[in-house]
Length: 596
Image (cartoon, rainbow, N blue to C red; front, side, top):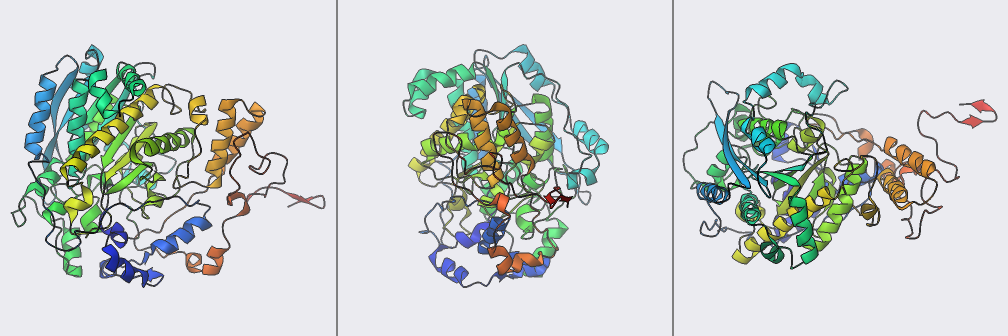
């Protein structure tokens, strides 16, 4: 999530290192994990464990080249990329030239002091409403509440409940109805080293400021139909953009190596470096904020849980949930705006993901199932299929806790909370962070800006057309257009996800008995398995290391079945068409007239 560097290093170390990695035993025990007392499961063993839990295989292409594996590594060309201050001023200039349709404001926040050391930051919020900013839109963004809103929420919502995601948690009530304009939030630059994300934000803002058939056609491959749909969608949408969430981390990236940092390392990271004799990350590798806390691990949902392969330098979650001003600012913005859809834009790999971040199994509901169909379609059209889609925990091989997107869904009740990874070179050195997280050639940079802006616009069209259940449409049903899309080989799917998709397709296309199809979908959703990945310090379940158990495969009801033929329901697919269903644990069955 946001391209955590060391966890992906096994496939980024170049040819020589990959040969070495192939010689590793089933369990790796590295100095990093020795210091933390954790044993890391290899990627190969994880795949077997995932399959045992019923997860289907999915394509995860590797992107990049290994030509810069050795030093000296490329350095940012600030005549091609923009430094943060220059980029921010350029955005102000664009907005101020189109005050009828655009608004920008600066918001500030103070984080929780650590060792009496204060830490604060600020962000810009850009708002775009084609045709003219409404009084409601301006009133909303001009009345974003202070940090006290966050402190009040923390007081009223016990940390323990959210760290466990137990039955006591409640989403924040929405004040607006769903019958007004579509509201979309786009967040860029959550991690400092992901420079291409803020470049894409600037490009998008400039395009929106002059959106017309003439300006859209070159971005959309001269597709006049799509350009017309984009303009229609924008006429009924308010777009909210945070061009750079993590300004303090970005400023470290722009500093010369060896320059004095403004804030001290948190004790947990300092102790880790001393124990492992590892060096601090290079400035160009700065992922976290200005005081080395990851804003994308600082959210309340499962905060404080640390994965089996936890890296403090990469994902230290901070001393408390919402301790960081970056997270507090996003909380305040989302609370005021109440978007129906949010995209958190990262780099470090290519990928299009939906919640949760905390499990390799994708949430099974109509909205997420429709989203992966639509993401598959956009992936093929704009990116040649290079992105894995679905569950980030399956695609990258690690899970994460305390993430923004998971709280957007569970805390704010946002129907569509996606994470996009828009660039990455997975075959270069882990120390070559500029190239690992960003394209470096001028033409490639420009093409990334264009393609991912087209993706954003295509996504807005899909949302406006009601293609994601629950956004301008029924939350329980696919549209006909979605039903006619093929079921994708998305990451994190089990047979229950596939069955639910098949049933929702049938309902939308009028195939089969409607009540029977509805019952079929509900049963598939209810029987979706769950999976707990070991936390830092927890023992790995003994059966996970038992290859005989693993090779037996999943329970029968989760075993992959043949794909549905295009003509209609298949007698071979599903557990509700008269065949004898395997009983679930807890079911009552009858043998010889006796219930057992």
